[in-house]
Image (cartoon, rainbow, N blue to C red):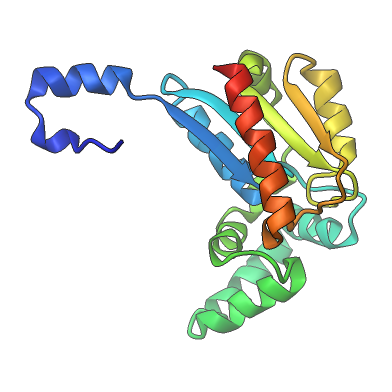
Length: 198
């Protein structure tokens, strides 16, 4: 149900605002975006689920190692920024470069987020935030996913053991949403997590 708070008188708007809560579910780079939204509105978010989460760069991935080198070097960043500025005249060209280097199955929103938040991914996950909210966070990892690798699963399980962690073993990959079977399995998993949490 959606309620437009602008048309409700102030006392009722205040009460509804206090009752308004959020559930955040993000896939891949969307997990990073949803976790950032959770940080900004933590008093309103009751649960966050990251699916095949891309929360930090994977040093074992050659593509991601190149991204890390770029993000860590101010000279390379300046060079790429200049090139991107030149390509800004032709935005479709810069989007094509990102899409072909990062992933053909990425959505337009994910590509835009990658272009605008590249430096954020050279950092480790926000361990303090995860430790402060372990009962409000769940992650689903894939067995062979270089964007959300099992090494991150293991690191989270050591650093924040109370976070709900799962590994998908049905054979669906990072692009699970491209198949009906993958979409159905993940939707059922998410529904189960929500039901268990509530």
